[in-house]
Image 1 (cartoon, rainbow, N blue to C red):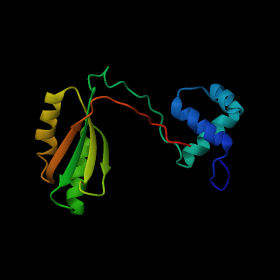
Image 2 (cartoon, rainbow, N blue to C red):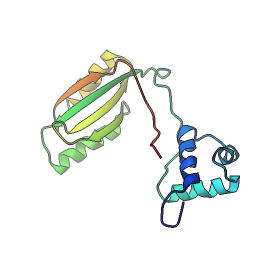
Image 3 (spheres, helix red, strand yellow):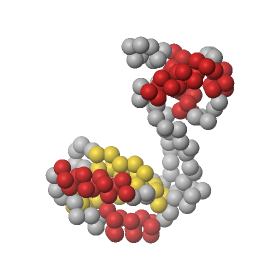
Length: 156
């Protein structure tokens, strides 16, 4: 990374490769991006320190883990206070079924992506969890029929 915080061509190639497979060795990354292994190590550290990249994770297969049903759930709050939002967001953080949550503009306040094993599992979750929360006015759910595209890669 340049001193002005800008990414050079090697940094961009490195980011693309890391997003595709963070398990590659520094030597393999160096070969792919056209740099030395030591340079790749320094660049990765600089990108981490600058907050450009975060922790390294392995992606799990939802179907292999019995969580192949994806539900997109829109939530409307009945109170818009800072305290009720903070309480709801704490609830969101505590529920493993909720794998993504976005605070939204527009008609709905939140959009959740929920990974469950089946419709009955979702019914229990929505009725006893989300809709039972005191800050929630209502929710609308859409079941994903199939996944057309999924990536964690951010364009560089």
